[in-house]
Image 1 (cartoon, one colour):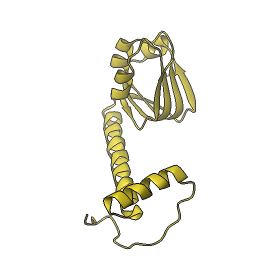
Image 2 (cartoon, rainbow, N blue to C red; image 1 turned 30 degrees about the vertical axis):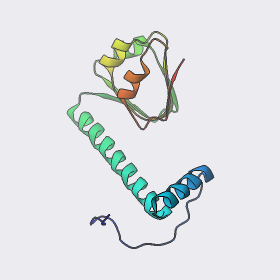
Image 3 (cartoon, rainbow, N blue to C red; image 1 turned 60 degrees about the vertical axis):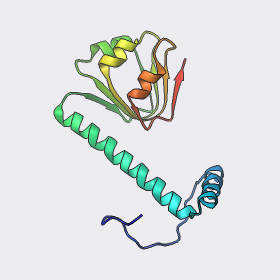
Image 4 (tube, rainbow, N blue to C red; image 1 turned 180 degrees about the vertical axis):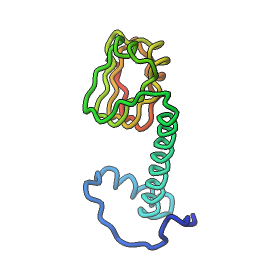
Length: 148
């Protein structure tokens, strides 16, 4: 794959602190199986991850610029009730949280009408009566969706 203008073709040795040994072993095995290098696979994975982040960020910035959403971010843990969602006059974007908990009184219809996106949240807890696929369709960079 050729390098774009914004990327340097310079290659150097780098150390990645905190890299999971399991991930490294999986990447190493994949490199051996595909005849590529660990560096090539990591470069491509990071390139795709950065592209995804840029796309999500651009999409959210456009929604915010249009003034059609409320943004809730930077809260470590948040529990959202039916009343919370009904009180909003615009759809909401939840972003940059460790956990987002939808209370048991939240419904599929409220999620459809009031939740624009869920972005960069580690874990989203949803009532068993709410579709996890509905939550997933509104999610970007969410690690886990857990029915409760």
